[in-house]
Length: 196
Image (cartoon, rainbow, N blue to C red):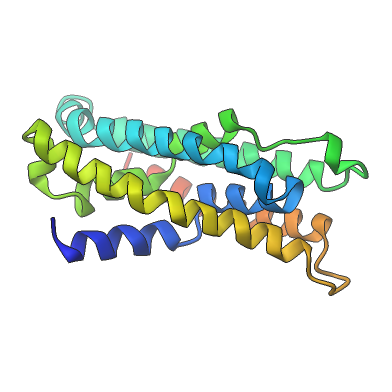
Protein backbone atom coordinates (compact mmCIF):
# COMPACT_ATOMS: atom_id res chain seq x y z
CA UNK A 1 0.00 0.00 0.00
CA UNK A 2 1.52 3.32 -1.01
CA UNK A 3 0.88 6.77 0.38
CA UNK A 4 0.64 7.97 -3.22
CA UNK A 5 -2.36 5.68 -3.78
CA UNK A 6 -4.06 7.02 -0.64
CA UNK A 7 -3.35 10.64 -1.57
CA UNK A 8 -4.61 10.20 -5.15
CA UNK A 9 -7.79 8.42 -4.03
CA UNK A 10 -8.53 11.16 -1.48
CA UNK A 11 -7.85 13.93 -3.99
CA UNK A 12 -10.10 12.43 -6.67
CA UNK A 13 -12.89 11.58 -4.22
CA UNK A 14 -12.81 15.15 -2.87
CA UNK A 15 -12.98 16.61 -6.39
CA UNK A 16 -16.50 17.79 -7.29
CA UNK A 17 -18.22 15.40 -9.65
CA UNK A 18 -21.65 13.94 -10.34
CA UNK A 19 -21.77 11.74 -7.23
CA UNK A 20 -20.48 14.46 -4.90
CA UNK A 21 -22.89 16.97 -6.38
CA UNK A 22 -25.79 14.61 -5.69
CA UNK A 23 -24.59 13.95 -2.13
CA UNK A 24 -24.41 17.70 -1.45
CA UNK A 25 -27.79 18.22 -3.11
CA UNK A 26 -29.33 15.60 -0.86
CA UNK A 27 -27.82 17.37 2.15
CA UNK A 28 -29.44 20.56 0.87
CA UNK A 29 -32.77 18.90 0.21
CA UNK A 30 -33.35 16.58 3.16
CA UNK A 31 -30.52 17.36 5.60
CA UNK A 32 -27.53 15.51 6.95
CA UNK A 33 -29.13 12.61 8.80
CA UNK A 34 -31.57 11.56 6.06
CA UNK A 35 -28.83 11.75 3.44
CA UNK A 36 -26.54 9.29 5.21
CA UNK A 37 -28.47 6.36 3.70
CA UNK A 38 -26.94 7.31 0.33
CA UNK A 39 -23.37 6.48 1.36
CA UNK A 40 -23.74 2.69 0.98
CA UNK A 41 -25.21 3.28 -2.50
CA UNK A 42 -22.10 5.26 -3.45
CA UNK A 43 -19.81 2.59 -2.00
CA UNK A 44 -21.55 -0.23 -3.91
CA UNK A 45 -21.64 1.84 -7.11
CA UNK A 46 -17.89 2.44 -7.00
CA UNK A 47 -17.15 -1.13 -5.92
CA UNK A 48 -18.97 -2.56 -8.92
CA UNK A 49 -17.83 0.06 -11.46
CA UNK A 50 -14.15 -0.02 -10.52
CA UNK A 51 -14.15 -3.82 -10.44
CA UNK A 52 -15.79 -4.09 -13.87
CA UNK A 53 -13.51 -1.47 -15.41
CA UNK A 54 -10.45 -3.06 -13.86
CA UNK A 55 -11.14 -6.66 -14.81
CA UNK A 56 -13.33 -6.79 -17.90
CA UNK A 57 -13.57 -3.64 -19.97
CA UNK A 58 -9.94 -3.49 -21.10
CA UNK A 59 -10.19 -7.10 -22.28
CA UNK A 60 -13.55 -6.57 -23.98
CA UNK A 61 -12.43 -3.26 -25.52
CA UNK A 62 -9.81 -5.15 -27.52
CA UNK A 63 -12.59 -6.77 -29.57
CA UNK A 64 -15.30 -4.10 -29.18
CA UNK A 65 -13.30 -0.91 -29.62
CA UNK A 66 -16.29 1.45 -29.37
CA UNK A 67 -17.38 0.13 -25.94
CA UNK A 68 -15.55 2.74 -23.79
CA UNK A 69 -17.01 5.58 -25.91
CA UNK A 70 -20.49 4.08 -25.70
CA UNK A 71 -20.23 3.79 -21.91
CA UNK A 72 -19.07 7.41 -21.66
CA UNK A 73 -22.00 8.57 -23.78
CA UNK A 74 -24.46 6.62 -21.66
CA UNK A 75 -22.92 8.12 -18.51
CA UNK A 76 -23.25 11.63 -19.92
CA UNK A 77 -26.92 11.07 -20.82
CA UNK A 78 -27.70 9.79 -17.33
CA UNK A 79 -25.99 12.81 -15.74
CA UNK A 80 -28.10 15.13 -17.94
CA UNK A 81 -31.24 13.25 -16.86
CA UNK A 82 -30.31 13.78 -13.19
CA UNK A 83 -29.57 17.46 -13.81
CA UNK A 84 -33.00 18.03 -15.40
CA UNK A 85 -34.70 16.17 -12.56
CA UNK A 86 -32.83 18.25 -9.97
CA UNK A 87 -33.66 21.52 -11.79
CA UNK A 88 -37.36 20.69 -11.98
CA UNK A 89 -37.56 19.74 -8.32
CA UNK A 90 -36.06 23.11 -7.33
CA UNK A 91 -39.33 24.80 -8.33
CA UNK A 92 -41.36 22.57 -6.01
CA UNK A 93 -42.55 24.62 -3.05
CA UNK A 94 -42.85 21.57 -0.79
CA UNK A 95 -39.40 20.02 -1.18
CA UNK A 96 -39.72 18.15 2.10
CA UNK A 97 -42.21 15.81 0.40
CA UNK A 98 -40.16 15.39 -2.78
CA UNK A 99 -36.93 13.47 -2.38
CA UNK A 100 -35.51 13.14 -5.86
CA UNK A 101 -32.10 11.86 -4.85
CA UNK A 102 -32.59 8.34 -3.61
CA UNK A 103 -30.21 5.45 -3.17
CA UNK A 104 -31.07 4.11 -6.64
CA UNK A 105 -30.25 7.43 -8.37
CA UNK A 106 -26.99 7.84 -6.47
CA UNK A 107 -26.00 4.22 -7.11
CA UNK A 108 -26.57 4.59 -10.86
CA UNK A 109 -24.79 7.96 -11.00
CA UNK A 110 -21.79 6.43 -9.21
CA UNK A 111 -21.89 3.31 -11.36
CA UNK A 112 -21.69 5.56 -14.45
CA UNK A 113 -19.25 8.06 -12.92
CA UNK A 114 -16.17 8.47 -15.16
CA UNK A 115 -14.02 8.64 -12.02
CA UNK A 116 -14.46 4.84 -11.71
CA UNK A 117 -12.58 4.36 -14.99
CA UNK A 118 -9.85 6.70 -13.78
CA UNK A 119 -9.53 4.78 -10.51
CA UNK A 120 -9.42 1.39 -12.25
CA UNK A 121 -7.06 2.33 -15.07
CA UNK A 122 -4.68 4.83 -13.48
CA UNK A 123 -4.95 5.00 -9.69
CA UNK A 124 -5.33 1.42 -8.48
CA UNK A 125 -2.04 -0.49 -8.77
CA UNK A 126 -1.92 -3.01 -11.63
CA UNK A 127 -1.40 -5.77 -9.05
CA UNK A 128 -4.95 -5.09 -7.79
CA UNK A 129 -6.37 -7.10 -10.68
CA UNK A 130 -3.86 -9.98 -10.39
CA UNK A 131 -4.58 -11.43 -6.94
CA UNK A 132 -7.56 -11.57 -4.62
CA UNK A 133 -5.45 -10.39 -1.67
CA UNK A 134 -4.27 -7.27 -3.55
CA UNK A 135 -7.82 -6.57 -4.72
CA UNK A 136 -9.25 -6.87 -1.18
CA UNK A 137 -6.52 -4.66 0.30
CA UNK A 138 -6.76 -1.86 -2.27
CA UNK A 139 -10.55 -1.90 -2.49
CA UNK A 140 -10.82 -1.98 1.31
CA UNK A 141 -8.60 1.08 1.65
CA UNK A 142 -10.58 2.82 -1.10
CA UNK A 143 -13.90 2.19 0.67
CA UNK A 144 -12.47 3.31 4.03
CA UNK A 145 -11.41 6.59 2.42
CA UNK A 146 -14.74 7.01 0.60
CA UNK A 147 -16.93 6.99 3.73
CA UNK A 148 -15.61 10.13 5.49
CA UNK A 149 -15.41 12.00 2.18
CA UNK A 150 -19.06 11.16 1.43
CA UNK A 151 -19.96 12.42 4.92
CA UNK A 152 -18.10 15.63 4.09
CA UNK A 153 -20.12 16.26 0.88
CA UNK A 154 -23.45 15.60 2.62
CA UNK A 155 -22.38 17.87 5.48
CA UNK A 156 -21.41 20.64 3.04
CA UNK A 157 -24.85 20.51 1.43
CA UNK A 158 -26.56 20.60 4.82
CA UNK A 159 -24.29 23.45 5.95
CA UNK A 160 -25.12 25.56 2.90
CA UNK A 161 -28.84 25.55 3.73
CA UNK A 162 -28.23 26.87 7.23
CA UNK A 163 -26.58 30.00 5.85
CA UNK A 164 -28.60 33.17 6.32
CA UNK A 165 -27.64 34.74 2.97
CA UNK A 166 -30.92 35.26 1.12
CA UNK A 167 -29.77 34.11 -2.34
CA UNK A 168 -28.15 31.00 -0.85
CA UNK A 169 -31.42 29.12 -0.57
CA UNK A 170 -32.48 25.58 -1.37
CA UNK A 171 -33.91 26.46 -4.79
CA UNK A 172 -30.80 28.30 -5.99
CA UNK A 173 -28.46 25.64 -4.59
CA UNK A 174 -30.33 22.84 -6.35
CA UNK A 175 -30.31 24.75 -9.62
CA UNK A 176 -26.59 25.42 -9.23
CA UNK A 177 -26.02 21.70 -8.64
CA UNK A 178 -28.06 20.99 -11.79
CA UNK A 179 -25.86 23.32 -13.85
CA UNK A 180 -22.72 21.69 -12.41
CA UNK A 181 -24.02 18.26 -13.45
CA UNK A 182 -24.64 19.54 -16.99
CA UNK A 183 -21.09 20.91 -16.93
CA UNK A 184 -19.76 17.42 -16.18
CA UNK A 185 -21.80 15.85 -18.98
CA UNK A 186 -20.49 18.15 -21.74
CA UNK A 187 -16.80 17.14 -21.74
CA UNK A 188 -17.80 13.53 -21.15
CA UNK A 189 -20.05 13.60 -24.25
CA UNK A 190 -17.34 15.33 -26.28
CA UNK A 191 -14.76 12.77 -25.22
CA UNK A 192 -17.12 9.94 -26.19
CA UNK A 193 -17.89 11.42 -29.61
CA UNK A 194 -14.25 12.12 -30.47
CA UNK A 195 -13.18 8.58 -29.57
CA UNK A 196 -15.78 6.90 -31.81
